[in-house]
Amino acid sequence: MLMAIPAENEINYAVFALNKDSAPGPDGFGGAFFQAHWETVNITFVLLSFNSSEIIGCFLG
Image (cartoon, rainbow, N blue to C red; front, side, top):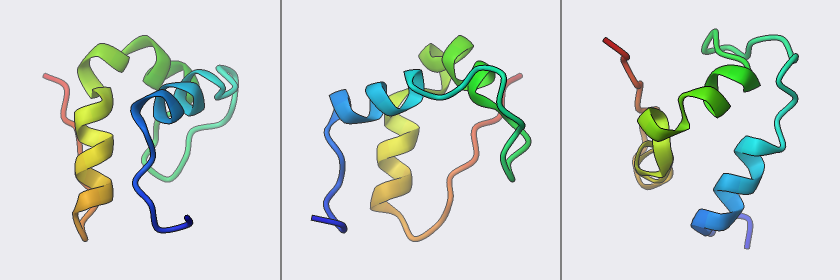
């Protein structure tokens, strides 16, 4: 189960359960960023990260 790819509803729950006022993570983005820009970041990037050996970056232009 630890290696299983999470379901879309689990990913959505995790993103919107983040504390909006938390300090940014190693990527420089905090919970408020991901919640506000979820339509851009979206599940596709998260699932690609789980399916890839690399961390996939999301660049907002």
